[in-house]
Image 1 (cartoon, rainbow, N blue to C red):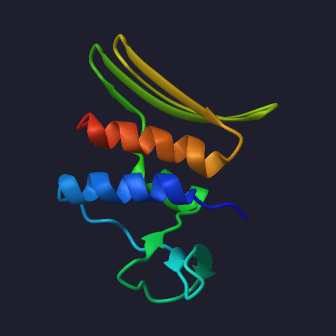
Image 2: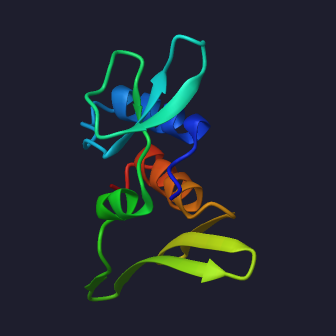
Length: 120
């Protein structure tokens, strides 16, 4: 089982805080423990320093569905490759793609970009 990396979880939380976007709950959380490092814990209540450690299914729920309106064409795709995963977005002539061996991180990078751009 893979989850969103700690670094991307921090970035996602910061963007949501800046844009006043509520973050959905997750089944897993990064918890700051007594040994001064983060660990992933399942099915627990979040603590003040906790960050959601989203799974791929949870991240995909954030992404909008395909949209076709007249000449406007918007497409989101998530694809497994030989050495990892691609998550990409295309809107008219705008295109952005993120690759990563961890599927959660590929999807998380795309989600963060979409939030920064105000596209979702």
